[in-house]
Image 1 (cartoon, rainbow, N blue to C red):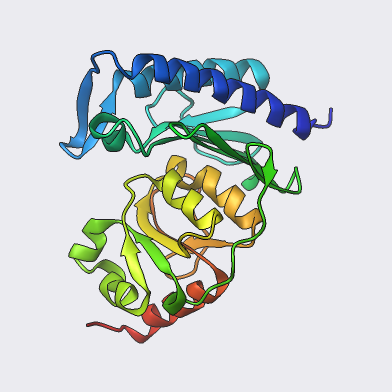
Image 2: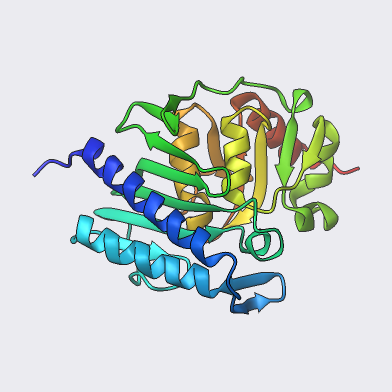
Length: 263
């Protein structure tokens, strides 16, 4: 049976709105905060509970699909064959814990490794960015977005992971120097929203599949490129040093990488 992508998108939108309602209700309660790999890599009871809620609902919507979740409540995914849902229940957990702001919920839906639908929910601003090739565009709630301007690196701001720049990984200091300036939001979802809105022209960070799956679908639909830092396709089942950028900015950044520029 052919997939009704329009209906599936509506179902996911309703699911995420209910998840948002639950997250907002829990925000003012005492959080249980644990460390994963260290004190700057946090997980809360809300992350875990939200992922469990989302995955239960996804299994009802799409029983044959695989689900990859950040907190481990999905499947042990070893192949992108078939339908794959990739879920980040709270993206920007440090922001969620420290600011109660600047965090997102994200779902990417892939078919045989190809992105079909993406959803990034800016929770506190109550704006759901959704769409993909199956819908023929990207929307912020009900407003369709146009493609962001194809700016060169020198003409715009770039989002960065601050540890990369501090350690000058992959010539990130030279990239920042060549841009109009650096911004750090602390959430891959919020970073990708800013690119969709044309507020920044790119983003570089070490990301796992749940960090970039939804954004890749949305940004590619808008003509923004996603790749590894050296221009290769992203591995949907492992960590990547990810470069998201306008076409011109990607060319500029790849040239810096090729030239082995240093400050």
